Image (tube, rainbow, N blue to C red; front, side, top):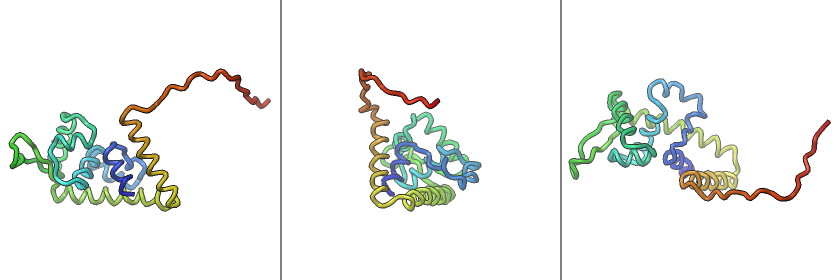
Length: 158
């Protein structure tokens, strides 16, 4: 289940779209905001460039998200002590509470999947999701299918 959780975060999949329980959260923040908060909860304090990379978003888009979250009091941005050019993004107490609530909801969703599948099916599902995400992210290996030269029979009901 941990692999699916990480997959959702890394690929930008939005499991919250499947939950009606998140409506009150989405009145406070966007799904991108929630994903950002979860990434920070999962990974800890990160430079802006790493948050953008985790989100799969350009740095300019991540800066807009970070400004919005900072204005709402969910994150704080500070200059790194090691490198003055680097801005570190940190969850505030309020942001940690919202991220924890979001994580609980995501784990509930994943728990529903886990209870619906046998352990073998869950393992297959996870492997297939990871494989699909890799194929879609890397842009391959999709091979064009040659046109069929065999005649096909089509059954038509009258």
